[in-house]
Image 1 (cartoon, helix red, strand yellow):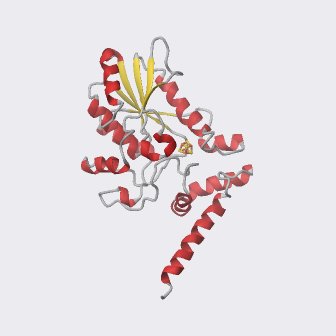
Image 2 (cartoon, helix red, strand yellow):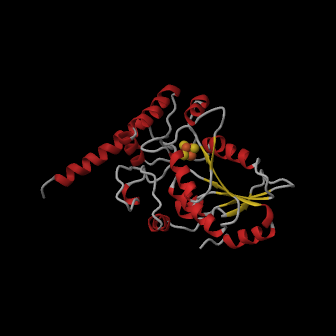
Image 3 (cartoon, protein in one colour):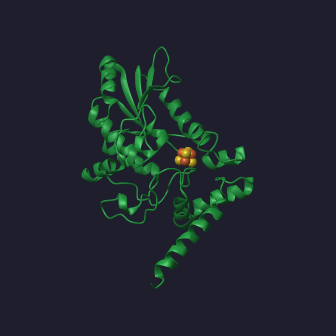
Length: 273
Ligand code: SF4
């Protein structure tokens, strides 16, 4: 149950004739769960899905964009794709000569938040909920977020915008269970454990940029093996700008080390006792 839902319902009743929901959709499991949740709670409210294309989205075996479009169509919501007209993710890193970090997430602000906020400014509603599929469980810092808050930069005299995390309290198991129960597919790039329909070949727990600044060491190794093009593009960029994405070493060094750990473990497992 979403504790912020009561307050959202109260606001919707107050502004009933001019309320809209904007679903930030990445094509991922949480965005789709959020879309289903909002449509179920507010079936009659105008709902718009928007996807920010960073230029480094998954393309195979189906693009994240097409996948998101299909999921939105299942809920009778059309998807608008927005972009930063000046640069893609890789171009941004090259122009700055450095990668974004957890502290300075310029990729999110320039390539996602900025274009989405520009889109929201075009919508003619007095009350808008800017909905994001953030869940408390994802990290300690996220758990401290407020699931409903005023977006001061988008709010004007004529328009009030709230950021809302509709599935903030939901766990990963609940999100997956909802997909399975409703036969709503997950993007094939997700690990096989996430799929109930036997889809195999996936290697990631998150659907984000093909290689994200938040990728774990094991993600990076999986990307090197399963999406060598993306790995090579970022690895080459590190070399070109003379700056590593991680402070602990280059992508090649990190993934070589991760592979060595796996090799040692496998060797030990094979030793006779
Ligand atoms: S998915 Fe990762 S790399 Fe891409 S914009 Fe978001 S934080 Fe940055």
